[in-house]
Image 1 (spheres, rainbow, N blue to C red):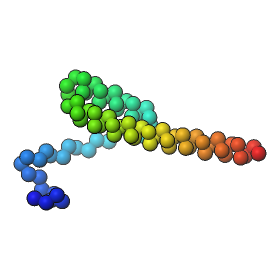
Image 2 (image 1 turned 60 degrees about the vertical axis):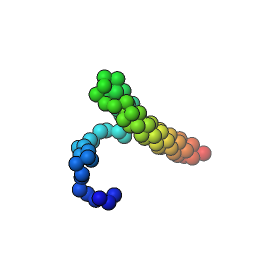
Image 3 (image 1 turned 90 degrees about the horizontal axis):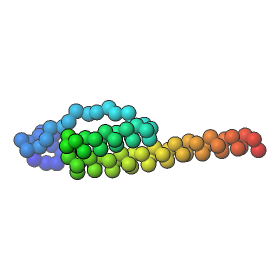
Image 4 (image 1 turned 135 degrees about the vertical axis):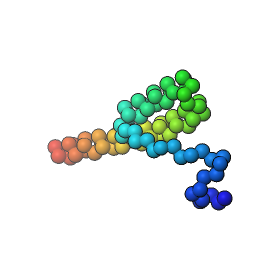
Length: 84
């Protein structure tokens, strides 16, 4: 079968249901990282999967922090420019 085929073979894993997790703040990401840690520690999730997902969450957290910093800087610049 080609790479773009939509049919699953007997050896392929079925696509898991899509989760809608709130991951729009750093606190949301920290909460999810803690949940992943607990899942890995308890054996509910493979440690390699936990590591991969944690890496993605860390990248997401850096993006959120950068965006938050940018928003705060813009507010400060508006305040400064309004008082010059």
